[in-house]
Image (tube, rainbow, N blue to C red; front, side, top):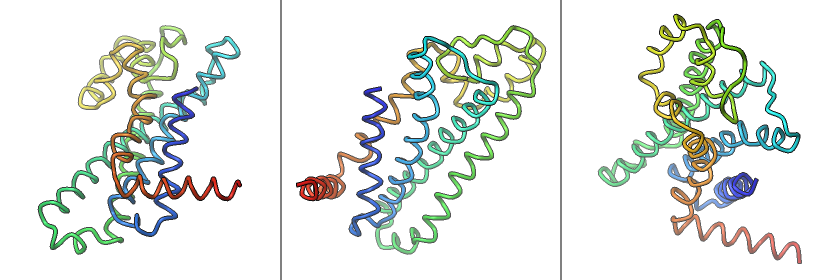
Length: 223
């Protein structure tokens, strides 16, 4: 709960600061805003349900809820990977081609690149969600994880279908993270969305200045 609230607060502050401060209306901060939205979504897909289950002392999730978890987790995590690639390209242009930066990274181009990251995540999520839940399951319905993780779902499938499905996942990050244990799942599903705030945002002087002014404004209005 503490990590979840910290992630919501940190990413929420970034979104508000970028949206309200005209000095931050630049490609880098536009992409940071999108990254914060993705991080809020990623941690919200898994953590609230697991907290509710913990409070109610249950491990139950509906079939529809499981499908939704898988779909949105794939969408948000893959979109974040695409967006980080876009952010890397943005920094490459800024450093290596500074005279052409405004031309190459215009507002329309930035919107198109962000939309491509979200769209790519959506297509990726549709593909893997459909593939995952089209496979017959013969091993019960108990998942050994605190959320509906694809490799754990595949373990419930019939062996022939499981082997056929593995080929699709070998080339994806899901396998890298999903044959692993609970600690790794917590790292990429819970810790990463909160850590991105520190890694990509709070070390930036302009953003820290904007956040400081935003917090001061809120305190003054309360007084």
